[in-house]
Length: 64
Image (cartoon, rainbow, N blue to C red):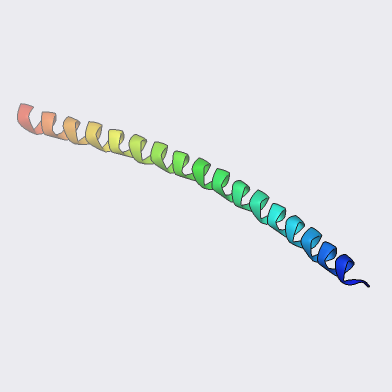
């Protein structure tokens, strides 16, 4: 194998590896974005439910 072929092989391998890492990183980022969005929605919902329940208990205590 000539030296030029050796460099070409390495360059090709590095470019393919870089592309694979780039794609996996992009997939991981999209997964994290979806996960964070879902987490945010759950926290907002649970907070709203807790506030509503607390308000109801306070209203009952004040009325009683």
